[in-house]
Image (cartoon, one colour):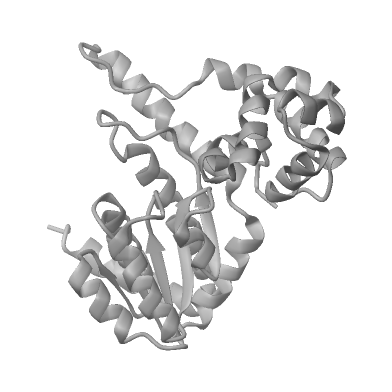
Length: 287
């Protein structure tokens, strides 16, 4: 179950990875959200030129046992739509004044975190925290902006004396994946879930028995499907202007959640490491 469940955000993010028939249903729902709670499964099938069975399969793909549960969730999500429309993601525009840029970037970052809470599964977080606590070592894999998220994760988990390292280029990732075993956790960070270097390393890490955690966009990407544990994020469409800002903030939030989950569960043991690392850094600032 998601933390702040919003089926409309899930449909938006999952749409492009659905089957062609399921995509017809998804697009109709997103374009006609207000009328959906009033439609029977037969009505929706007719309007989308599909079938009752296709609509039901779509509901199950989105995580619902049946059409009734799906419609209840749609109705609940509609309640927040007015606020959603006021606070839409905004891309970088030519000539924006600085006040507009400040407001838009702050809004986009907040929305990325808020939408991520609508798709990330609390049970998957709990599973991830458990395997991280039991692991011998943790390897983070990410390319580009995702690699920066891995570096942040390494810094955090190192503070509580977890053996970990981040690998940010294809060659080092292949080498690291080859040396993993069943006692290790490999965390693959990729917004698209289709980065070739990441998928190549994943295959090796999985073959060696490491537990695979994916931090990736909410869809049926190859990374999400092949991971043992998938931690989903939700961000606006990435453009050449906005780049990976939203996805980076969402991924950093997931890392913070994992770190806090592990540190809290093991607080009696890790508080001495947190104190030591804090004190050594603080001593460098004393006059």
